Amino acid sequence: MAHRPKRHSPDKIPLEMTPMIDVVFQLLIFFMLTLKIVAIEGDFNIKMPLAPSGSDIPELDLPLTVRLSAVGGDKVAIELDGKALGSFAELRSAVIEKVGYNTGEDSPAAKQEVVLDVDYDLHYRYVIDAITHVRGAPTSEGKFVPLVEKIRFGQQRAPGAAGG
Amino acid sequence: MKVKSGAPMAEGDMTPMIDMTFQLIAFFMILINFNEAIIDERIQLPKSELAQPPDQPTDEPITIQLTKDNLLIFSGDVVPVAQLRGLLTNEKNFLERKKDLATGRTKKAADATIFIRADNRAKSGVVQQVIQDCMQLQFEKFALRAVQESKNEP
Image 1 (cartoon, each protein chain N blue to C red):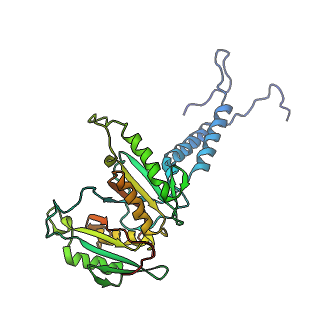
Image 2 (image 1 turned 30 degrees about the horizontal axis):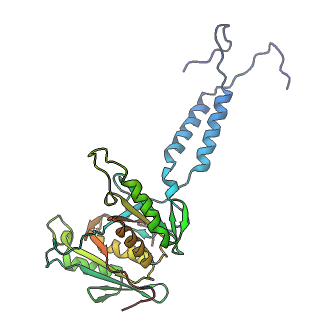
Image 3 (image 1 turned 120 degrees about the vertical axis):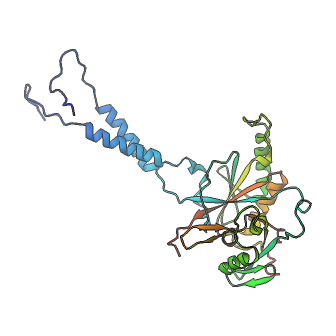
């Protein structure tokens, strides 16, 4: 490393460091104060086509209906095609049992559609829980195997009309 | 403090300090989050194991946030759900004046993606209402946003 000369010759102008250090510290403090650590966010894509579905979908590929009912203040009752299930883990198992894993475009799970029929007053987190459990299954290596990609909302229910 | 003239002055070497300070500035600059404007702390997103950040940025994103009191936050303003259609109509009109740089065609509502950041305690029916309102204005693509759940969390 080159050492700074102790004495400057008359033809050399010494560089004033103080303003630069002032500005640098101002910048440093600005970035430190504006730093906000946020959790990583992700998306679940849902396509709600405007054209009436049915004409291009084979009749055999009837959608699976996941019914989520608000029970009491903050509980949920889950049904898959009318069959009551105890938890979201059971919902995932039932979906795997019906359509298997999504192993490619030709697999039944890739073609299958799931319709979410939810109560108006149900807390939104249960909708995300249902989508999570229908869309993927964890493996022992900590990764996720895709299940059903096509998820959409069904007909909107009236406020206060829980159950049914 | 009086310094005797002619006495040799000890001059500290500033280089390591400046190096370190620039490193710190670079570190904080990289960490700064420019999406902060659309991330509102009033919204507590639901958690999901499958929530993964998108691989590539979305072409025409429109973010709608829904609080636990079932009010919308749109472009920084808190508005009731009933006002959403008017606000989205403005967005749609603006979008339809834009041209796709690659193809040259005019963009339409179906090209946009509506990001819904709803609080985990919001009513599902209101989320559906938001989607219905968007669909009536020809929006088709929706992304429900959730926060990544770490595997250690219960």
